[in-house]
Length: 239
Image (cartoon, rainbow, N blue to C red; front, side, top):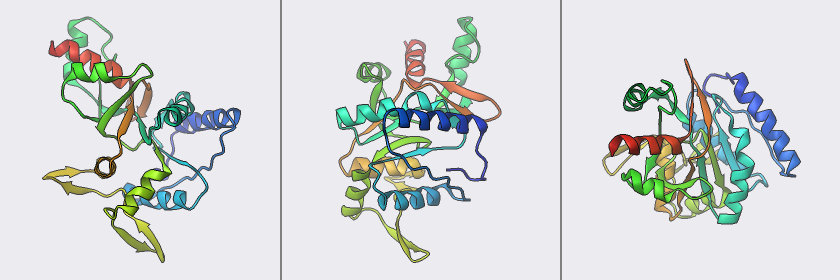
């Protein structure tokens, strides 16, 4: 989805490569290009279309993210093997972390090497514990995930609707479930992505992050990096 009808060339290039990977692995797919002024409404509408399709997984890709083509099929296969229902690929925020920048300066490392922020909320605040819990294949159970590169099994949406904890609304005579809504939860404001993650946790699902992904997020700068590497560098700083 995109808010202003603009898709970056790098994102399109990654999408074309992903399509090729799908076809080489005999994976059927359907692509929807969605845009609008409110990202939460876009995600709800696309989920509505997905639930009426014969597809098993919904993949959200934001129009300013790229390099995902190297990981999607591999992650899909691991989701099937490990029975993961929700997996997000980590990608940087369009921000640098000052502590990591200072670490690079003090250690005389390349200034912008492994120094971006990530919008993933961990289950544990203990960095050492998070490092220990990363699987050999690069997955980590987390609390809240961003939706910019997110894979969701259809059963998740069905279960959330059956649990009656998702409100619905009418749009063009269609009943749309508000899976992605901004809300206040236990005195904390949750954006549409974190809100969806919390709905999933409350319904008994686990959110997993593929922290070994090396994706780029386009802003004034191509922000890139692996969340796994940043966790390990933060641990070195905190020791």
